[in-house]
Image (cartoon, rainbow, N blue to C red):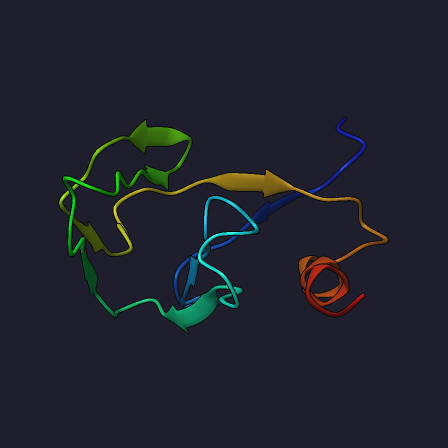
Length: 98
């Protein structure tokens, strides 16, 4: 028997898209955003010849991008395991505010 219970997290309970910078120092004064899961965001690099930009999602990095479209793919499902004494909500709150 597993020590930790399996907890399934689906889009109906956690319908959010976390948009964060790759580097904590760039872009300056922008800490990221928590957006609704249904939103689509497009970034366009103004001068990609002078300033190279990288984009990373799910541990895959693409360098020298000209534009990036960000959206949530609901076709992927994951099973997460947690300690029964520390819920997902508690962990999220601790990461955001402590």
